[in-house]
Image 1 (cartoon, each protein chain N blue to C red):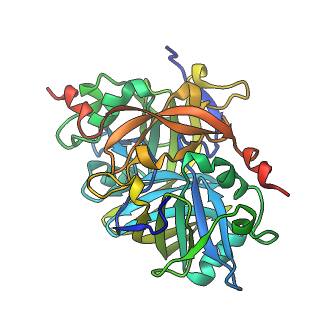
Image 2 (spheres, rainbow over the protein chains, first blue to last red):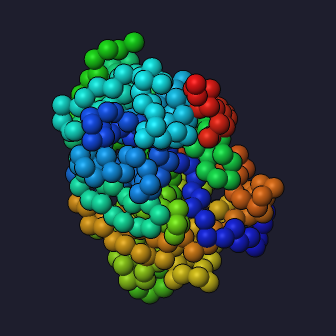
Length: 194
Length: 194
């Protein structure tokens, strides 16, 4: 075992990162999607998610203008679509059309979601935090919508059915599937109680 | 394939979530750790991570008082230790001692990190965002330290060597390992270019 750790430097590397596909409308009502790895839940009540975008992205101004976005969780089988959404800009290309994906207008917020993805979050913009290269948008989750095929017996999305995947960060620029169940949360740690 | 999605309700469910062990010092200089799933990178420049804690936690006041925290990434083999850190409070128990983990004082920020974990981030508190039940602390990553055994040939932490794990959210309250490589980021999506 190492006893002295090596300095890697000041870098934005955390493990693991989610793969979140953000849905927005532009000024002309054209739906757009982009791929965001900098994000996650940031509050339980109200339920909120934070996603960070660079000002230079097309989606940035869309979120500001519409005060809304969706978070679409891709299953493994959409890995190429999700990756493409992070390679090209909605300024030049209608990514929904290019990817044969169907935009559905949310009835709760002014943003589109992806019909084909198994699970989506409809978010109303609550806070805009200007941090540096990235701006964090905190959205209140007004509803989650999911295919019935990915729900468990309590009616909640089951990760083993949604089959999302992760981004391995800049140390290993690959996507990875979710592996095996290694223990029950709020339970396996009880072995340490004395 | 489902054509109409079901409403799941307004819940803080996103997939997947990281497992982040937050290190802090209390007023007496006693090191503490807690388990946080609400977090992620939120800016590339300066490199920043956001972690959300309830005000009721012992770590909350520690971060406010010291203006610093560490983010410790557990490898799979520490799943029981990581879970325990989220079950009991540092108000009652010295979790480092209980878990036989070694606190190391960061030389960059006023917080301890876990010697035995493969990769840690030393963070200076930049922003405190009061959202609701949770408060989000945005910390600037001043350095990452990692065991040489988990670095790739570019000197960066490699997810396949760090072997972190994820929290499956409230739909499936289990921890899961990282699965197989399913494609190269910024690359597999090129198949959609016309």
